[in-house]
Length: 421
Ligand SMILES: Cc1cc2nc3c(=O)[nH]c(=O)nc-3n(C[C@H](O)[C@H](O)[C@H](O)COP(=O)(O)OP(=O)(O)OC[C@H]3O[C@@H](n4cnc5c(N)ncnc54)[C@H](O)[C@@H]3O)c2cc1C
Image (cartoon, rainbow, N blue to C red):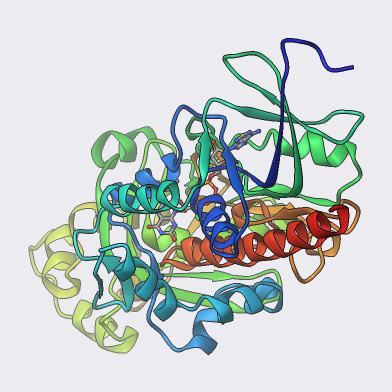
C-alpha cells in the first residue's frame, strides 16, 4: 500500500540527473515523442556544467575522429557508437541551434564564442521546457520500492513514480556539493549491478615539498614545461603544458594530461615519477654546452638564468629535487634540467578531481546502454566506466551517451506502452 503522503504518478520516460548527460537524454527522448519527466536532487540542474563554464567551457575538440576516439583509451570501442552518432561537429551544430556559436581555439579545442556555459544552459532549458519536459528539482532518487516504482525524497515528502523507461545520469563522484555524490553506487551495487570502483581522473597529486620551497613557491605557476610519466605498461607519455605548485603538491593542465597514467602507477608502485623538462625548447647537448661556459664570478643562479633561462620557480624546483647541491658538472646539470624526477605520492581525493574514472561497468550494459539485469533502465554520462582527458572529451562523451540512452529509452517506452494498450 502506498502511504497517503506519497504522490503516485506515471510518466513515459523518467530521466534522473540534470547534468549534461541527463538533459541530452531528455532532449533525445522528447524529440522521439516520449513524455519526459526529469528529476534532480539539487535545487537547480546543470550545476557542474555551469562550473565547467567558469574556466572557459570546452565543449569538444576538432581533431580527426580517429585521434579524438583514441582519447577514450581502453574504453574507446564502448563509447565509439555514441560519439560517432553525435560527433564534435554535430555538437557544434546542436549548440548553433541553441543560438550559441562556437569557435576552435589554437589547440583545436571547441568553445562557445563567449566561453560561458550559462547562456547555453538557459537556452537549452527553455527549449526543453517548450518541448514539454517537466522538471522536478530537490527530488533525490533513493532506489525502487517492492513494486518497481522509483522512490524519491522531496520537500513534499516521499514520492513514488512509475515509468516505462528510466535513464540514470547521476554523474561521477567529484565536486559532490554540486550534486554528483555517487550515492547511486550503493543503490545499484545492492542490486548486483557491476560497478568499477570510482577513482579520481584529471586530478592533482601530492608531493612532499620542503617547508622552504612551499614558503617561497606555493601558488606559483610553472609555465611551458614538458612532463613525462611511464605507464604501468612501460610506455612513456610526454606532454607539454603548465601547472601550479600547490600547498599539497601539483595541479593544472599538464598534470591532468598525465594523471590517469600516474594514478595507475601509484596504485601498483606506491609512488610515480614525473620527469619534468624545464627547458623543453632546448636540446640537452646544446644546454650542456651553454652551461659549460666559464662561470667566472657569477653565482650559479645567475649562470643558470643566463645560459639556461632557468630562474624563479623553475630554479626553485631544480634545487628542491636535486637538493641544494646543484651538480657542478654542467652536463649533469643540463641533464637534471631536461629530466627532473618529481615524486608524486598520491592522487588528490576524488572530491577535488575534475572527473571520475570507474562507474557502471559496460559489461552490465547492452549496446543501447540499458542495464542487462534491469530492462528499461538505461545509464549515461560520467557514471559509466570510462574516462578521458580534459579537452572537451568529457562533455562530448556525456552528451553523446545521454543522447544514445535517451533515444533508446523512448523506443523502449513506446514499445512497452503500446504492448500494454
Ligand atoms: C571544475 C570543472 C571544470 C570542468 N570543465 C570541463 C570542460 O571544460 N569540458 C569538459 O568536457 N568537461 C569539463 N568538466 C567535466 C564535466 O563537467 C562533467 O564530465 C559533466 O558535467 C558530467 O556530466 P553528467 O551529466 O554525467 O553528470 P553531472 O554533471 O555530475 O550531473 C549529474 C546530476 O545528477 C544529479 N544527481 C546525482 N545523484 C542524484 C540522485 N540520487 N537523485 C537525483 N539527482 C541526482 C546531480 O544533482 C547532478 O545534477 C569539468 C568538471 C569540473 C569539476
